[in-house]
Image (cartoon, rainbow, N blue to C red):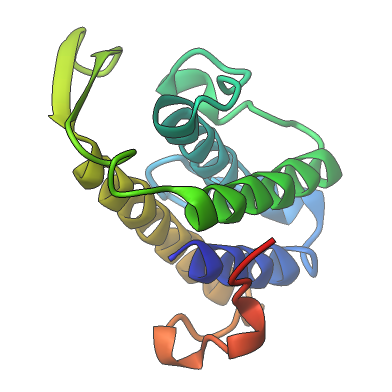
Amino acid sequence: MAAYTKWQNQSVYGAADTLTDVERQLDRGAFFGSIHSTLNHLLWADQLWMHRLAGTPKPSQPDIASSVRTHDDWEVLKADRFATDERLIDWSLHVTEEDLSGDLTWYSGTYQAEVRRPKWSLVVQLFNHGTHHRGQVHSMLTAAGTSPDDTDIQYLKSDHFRWSN
């Protein structure tokens, strides 16, 4: 799923590169409004889950509402996205069953309460959340007249996989 995430992020960012900043920031009626804002939110969420699961640094924005402002500059957003994808892949190559056993407890700003969930289920959440929001971006990009790659996992080529460092 880390390889799939990287592949799909390369696809949507490549398609979004064909648009102007104004087109990327246009409110298209999605949950987070624009392509740019949705991609900011997705990066923020991936960084938050990696912080919780792998101990990487916290994202720069403190909450969901501000997640859409993670990076105003498109090139900076892309660079951070691709660096985060590499960290995600590196982590996925080294994570063990022991790392994912037991529960994780954290304070949720969304629920304004402490939450506890099995760690393995939070890895599912990380990848499912990304697929959900990239699907929204894919739809917005298609409506804007650009063509991201197909999303079907069977089209993921073996050269996208990195089995070891």
